[in-house]
Image (tube, rainbow, N blue to C red; front, side, top):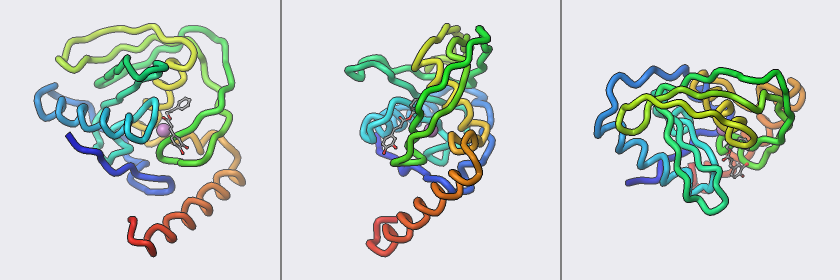
Length: 173
Ligand code: QAP
Ligand code: CO
């Protein structure tokens, strides 16, 4: 297992549209193990493969209090169930230090493959529903910052670019 580097906004690689996983094999399961290790170490509640520069449709999530409920979604499809939009403050490991209001439907049905390649369905509400939609956005090259004003997005970009320059100077990147 390994902790992978997480790409940070405005890295253009975060805009890649991920490809479906053709076969769920040991190669895929090994990437999933690395994604969980990376997500738990961060610590985060959700990670899309795109964020660790793997452009395949894989998501790891654990929204439990004690990090005891790992969920894997391969080739996920989401169907919005209720028309009830909810606004929640979201964070993102690829946009560290920033939390922004995003409005999403908080009840959805997800269809995906599990780590053995078997199809399953999961009805999601609340934080899990929000998180899965946030992570599926990553697989489409879409980011939380795309939901805020251009002015705010520019400010976030400038601040993160400044941080990246400082880290480069200190040999961290
Ligand atoms: C996505 O995000 C999410 O800024 C998962 O400095 C978050 O795990 C969906 C994190 C909230 C819905 C609601 C963010 C860690 C983790 C940071 C995360 C940071 C350290 C974010
Ligand atoms: Co994110």
